[in-house]
Image (cartoon, rainbow, N blue to C red):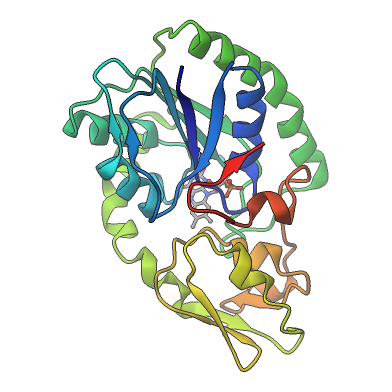
Length: 265
Ligand SMILES: Cc1cc2nc3c(=O)[nH]c(=O)nc-3n(C[C@H](O)[C@H](O)[C@H](O)COP(=O)(O)O)c2cc1C
């Protein structure tokens, strides 16, 4: 029995959901999505793809993964999106990408979590965050029961036709995502700890003369920005006064990539 839940996560929301789901599915392993991973899942009877919604669609690294991963024709495949409010029709994009590779999406789940796009809006209040966290256990139990029985389920969406249009239009928005780091800055609070470089899931940050330098292979996950212990990374002019966020039950050790195909306990 080979069961894998592939995940990508910048601030831990998706990883937290993946960890909770793993607990309820026998034999499930968590595998971090990386460019240099093993893309063979041909002997998987169940495979999940857990991702945060970016710009009404999937992160570029997750799209690259979908274009390379190999399942068998009998693999039960499900998606698990974490999103800040604008889920739109992002799950349909996942379905189309899998269909193009000859695979079927059996279920497209989504769970609303605190939005981490802090370059656009402030981190939700503690009250709002806790309200979201409190809904997770029931939803995970429901998802686990469907996955364990390899049941069929639709695709979670929101915003109706507007959501559909947004997810179709999102292709253009994502095409320049690797260069989104051009507006990242580091201020004088930086103490050269290097955590930004360690949390970057794609090795996009070099520390040069004690300061981070972004290499334009950015996935825009904002891990560097949110995990900086001095809040010294800024994105444009608005973020200096804004809070930082990561999921309270996910630690630096959970998020830092360590091995090629890291398995999380
Ligand atoms: C660059 C970027 C774009 C985002 N776009 C969306 C979006 O279109 N819709 C949405 O609901 N949330 C959006 N979000 C919020 C994340 O999907 C959400 O906070 C998610 O739970 C983060 O997961 P993580 O903690 O695993 O990284 C975006 C976040 C980032 C960093």
